[in-house]
Image 1 (cartoon, rainbow, N blue to C red):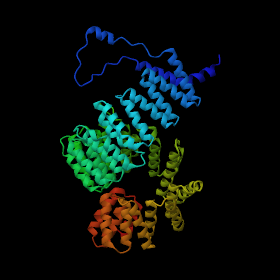
Image 2: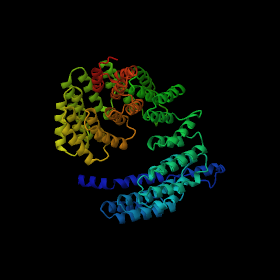
Image 3: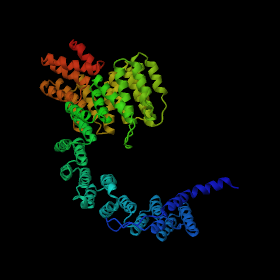
Image 4: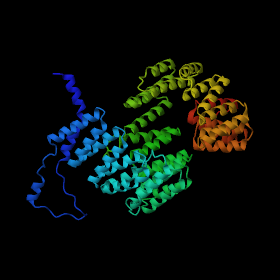
Length: 602
């Protein structure tokens, strides 16, 4: 027996075996669907028994032969013949499995017209089939026939069970993501969802999807209007509030926040909305308000794990380590209990909490506790991060060479892993007073790919540490040439000039370009405040630095703000700020240099 030949044919017809299996299930008896919502009369016992008798299978020898020929023709490159045979069999048997297979074959062969013919034949045979209608919609959108897709959108929605309608409506914007004409797609979706806008149960989701489609066209006013209409339809629905949150964070729409606040005043708002709002407040530099939102969440829903995780992460970011530890340990207590809701896979959250707890333990010098937390992280995706954290702990204990070897020994699964290892080793060397080794490592990697954007930036920063300013500037300007919107490059070069009191007008121009490209970045605002200080504009510098520090408490920003206050004669305020900087990161080089130069012991 030709075993290998037999196996070859088996794998060629394997799709057919799957198809036949699907047909077997498809031939099971189906209860008749009532023509209206009225409950049908109970069937007599004899009728019920008859209904339970399986019908004869439609899979005859002739049909099996045709399906086999169709599959083999398709696999042998005769796609049109294979699709035609499959579609003909579907029409004769009225079998949805065969219709679906014909559509799949047409899609795989990149035959848009045949895919459209097959899916329309299926929908005409089964006009109330959710699968047929949904697939017609998907094929039509994929073919770019956006203007015609409102009818199948309405038909798909009408064919779905009531429980599936809201999830489908919310998924509509993702279906049109690749549409070239976003405005046309937005209009089509509005037409397709028009019938449900008067339904209080579905209107909030429909207006939310309409709003997201409008937002894709940069129509913030229209998106905000949709969010308002959705909330008016049902103030207790979370969907318009989530759209408002998207407007607040992604589109910087200030008028969206009142919708979020109105929703949160409901008796039982979804905790995800409150957490999202807290994160938006943090990004806006409103940390106190973010804490208030998270405190209310953990108070009202103390058994909701993610509330404690968000609270712990915020405390840890602010270096309030005791409070962070309490919140994160509470999260782990709750997150390790079985969840009745299968949507929640909390493994990532547990790993995040343990990683943060390890960093907190590391900061206080309890390396055994840090290692204990790291040992509990068993995700392959986190393996490299765990080892890098361990390397940092070794370096803190004076074992830098061992730390470097540990980084180099980490297995690499992807090119991103390899890049992460290089970056981590260079950072470790810089932080531990070995800037030349860091530079040599990065320069060696850059020579292999001279236009790599990340390596250009990292090598430039290493050159700056060695006071090789001409080389640093050359690398940064090359990066800007390759990537004109590299805000970090403009900021780095501008700050380097400002920090050394060099070419200050040019430094300000570079930093202002970085602000233009990334207006909400507190570290770029810090650079802007610092160059204003160097230029002698102390009042302007103070205003900018105070806003930056409020938005992101950071030791380096504290150093700059403290120095500005000190030189303005506001020494008590300066000491308070600098003391906060020490609490945030006592080892920060800029902070330490500032304290020594000003002879301050906060």
